[in-house]
Image 1 (cartoon, rainbow, N blue to C red):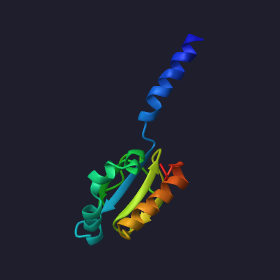
Image 2: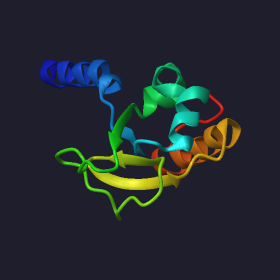
Image 3: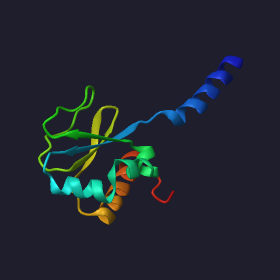
Length: 121
């Protein structure tokens, strides 16, 4: 009985630390929309949001292969492309950067649909 209690306690304490989802931004040198995203939002601001805590951001170059253990559903053609990944598998993507207001709305809908993220907070 005590063993089950301690297992449940350990799961309760460490489960919130596990980041199941990750957001990849695929960029390329000279991409004006990539530069605009970084100016409007940037990795630091993104990381300080509820969305950033739920799906931490990694930025990779278009010419680089996906990180080990990560598989995108199809090749990336447009930059920036934001790919939501869970357990190494692509769940959804946003192709292009439609501006700050649209980005947050699209990202919130994507996170809610794919991971159950509570947009309202």
